Length: 201
Image 1 (cartoon, rainbow, N blue to C red):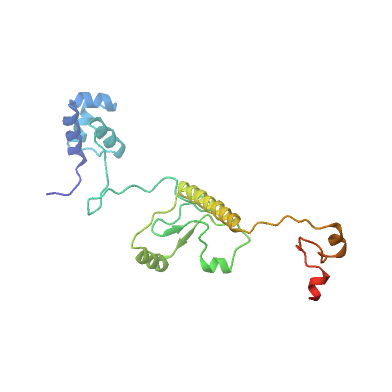
Image 2 (cartoon, rainbow, N blue to C red; image 1 turned 90 degrees about the horizontal axis):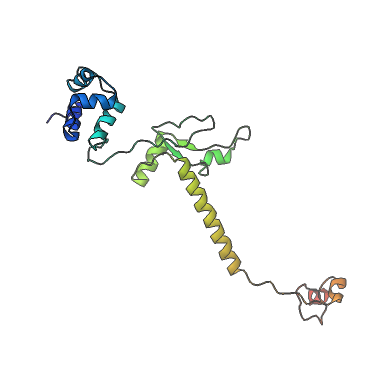
């Protein structure tokens, strides 16, 4: 079986499935019948967007698959960018802004805006990929938003747990003599502030 991708044959396939003549396909595409003939005879190059439109008429779509037959999605449009609004290097892995590299944490830069992300050079990237046994995509703006929401929820949960575990604050019933004397007197039932009599003991 020939693995070469022949776009012209897919135009013919789509036209057969959609039950369209060359003239009908040409009208839908806004081309001449001769132009459609050139597309099908491989004498003309086929733009990807034209091929996508032709395939869609037959209920088909283009897909990219790997050697195992799994579909590979394109890189999202809203991937994280640096402070100059440039994409991070595609071949390297990018960490979100809160995962500060140890060296940068020891030597922070105060002369520029906080980093929007960190990329790892090949040795560190390869080590982490082996540990995780996977390759991760660059984070998207949506990923960072969801991450921030998860962090906020976790902080609120921890605050609730700490408040629930904290001992109740006793209500103070000290008489005025405790306030004047610099601490609770011996006859005070509250004893919330050690007075001079307790310090001597």
